[in-house]
Length: 387
Image (cartoon, rainbow, N blue to C red; front, side, top):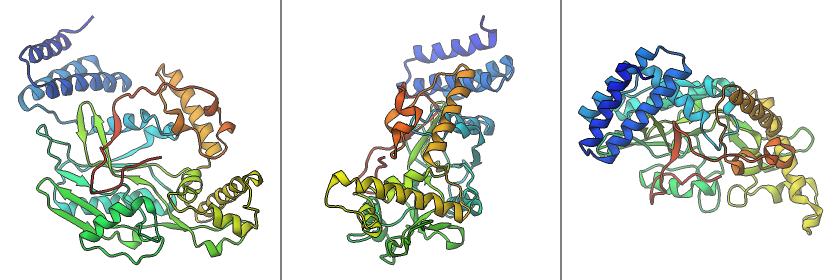
């Protein structure tokens, strides 16, 4: 049975609908009520407090078309967004996310310093910490107080003949702002941020807070390849949605799974395309696909990535361990009577997927909220993220 307070909150909601206010406002209220029920239920907070909070939020939305999360709501909502991320195999650790609240930060220099702090804190001298920094939310009129232009806070530049091809569009954008790279295969791009007035600021990331790992192999000499990669992947072009509120600047990170680097970033033909070079180094016969030279080179390249990160004390998980961790996550969610969702095509590892239990079971790809959402592809700015 509903309490009187909760009844009043739903009655207020009904009145809003009857006033035929804009659909966006109605959607915000629906999402807010849904999120608050989840927040109070999962944290085992008193029902009377929940009812009072729903009523207060309802009134705030009636008056302003939006509402403000408490820090506790913000923090838990960000963690739920990670837990609900269908493409992420690392969700076992969703409740360990560290949240930096920068919702009052709009000065571009202060935003830049907050981003530097995020990189430094998350890197943690190689002992990677899952982190999110949340800047002001999108306003009801659609304006974004802060916009991060980078796809990841740390990312290598892409030029016509060298570097990361996935970064070419954004690299040219940075060059149009006045940035110039050294034209090596591994130039760290600058951070580019923008406010609602169109003011743009770019800064090089201090080398003192960037951790990079040179790639070596425990058996073969990989020196001639001159490969390296950065320690922590910090996604910065996705939108965090919590209870109907969109945080359009909310960079976040976990840590790398080895295959993301060894089987995708280094191996993909539209990225660094290193398999032919590795095969040549290993002396493999590349004249026939039946020799499985791509497979052999791919395994050794991934061994090199795992070896290198371990040698340099940087957190990295292999795909077999990540799959086992996801299996624990599934059991934990089932025990909590929560429905498990996932995107099978993203959850299976790109190397030896059939060795994982994930390969052999289906997943419901329904999108739950809170969650992270991709932006639409734009003409300028950072490249759209693809697997």
